[in-house]
Length: 93
Image (tube, rainbow, N blue to C red; front, side, top):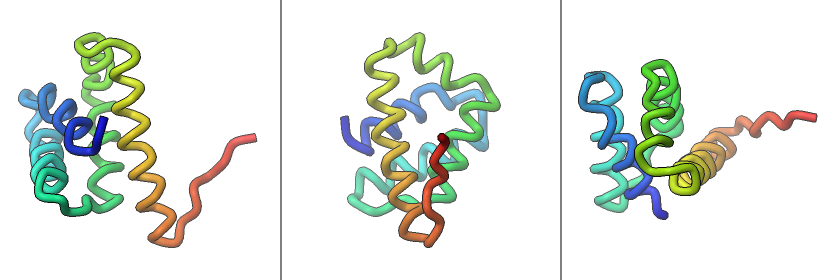
């Protein structure tokens, strides 16, 4: 799975939620065009999806393995962006 596919998964379930749809649409369009999506936008997409219950819907719709692939792909990009911005990811013990 690539970043474009992962962001499309968010977009596919975001229709009822205007703010999430806006962020997911922009991320999908940027990834489709080969552009980088800022850390703040990726983090915001996860936060809004969690608040609206979209993550559970994605897991149910696509299945556990595909859902995990999507989270890993977007999570790695989010961590990479965060590290570039000078904020090292927080590690739990």
